[in-house]
Length: 330
Image (cartoon, rainbow, N blue to C red):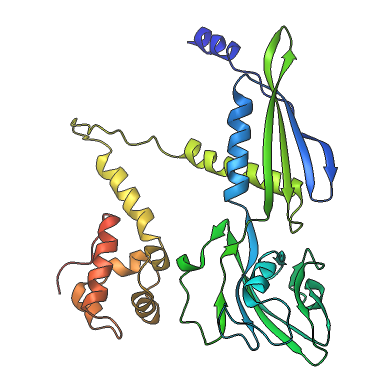
């Protein structure tokens, strides 16, 4: 057995060299990873590229309100651009929220001038990466131009139609949100020599950000996301087989089931993805975990304030997915 293990170690593929930056300018950097086993350049390069483009957290303007514009097709007296052009300019503003998940900021200017991002009144919790971004042009000395921005954190890209918002107030214009701080990602693979072989890969990964995050931060954050996913897969239990094992488990079956149920009872009720009304009813009645919930019978729940038949039906459905049910009797 020892001989087999030692033999297997001899066939392990060599690992690459640590990444290094070979070129950097402002928000652009070129990373290089050498000594990748043949084929791993594409594997790692494509994985990092997909994560960088789809999974980086950023901030974006999701709603605006312009004084004198009731909808996105409005024209504003004394302003050269129409509302649609202003919206396009606003989408190019790149914010970073240092505290909280959302912020509301304002812009107020008067007189003939070019309105830029630097004219926005920013609180300490918000940073603007491109203050020179053009927003609008005031062509009349007497014009007062006022805007309100609502900025939120998010991931990737989110169309306004997919965003679940409360009913917007009059004059509020919803925007498609471009949260990702990544502007561009490219990679190239070159062959290189390692020992006697000339077919190893050299990966060149090019990253350009919007200035709210550095290319280095983006690179290592993408690596961290991949590592966390593989850690879950590696450290998790063996995957379930597609074919059901008909062999009776006389020793550990019930014990494993009990452990799984015990873990499920520790789940917070917020994680059950219940409707807001049902969740609030549980929390108002001090039911905060699944364990506390399954100690209640259907009758007991129905007597709680704010709990109706629809809510109980929803709860039973969610518990069933966890292999659990309400207390019997009563």
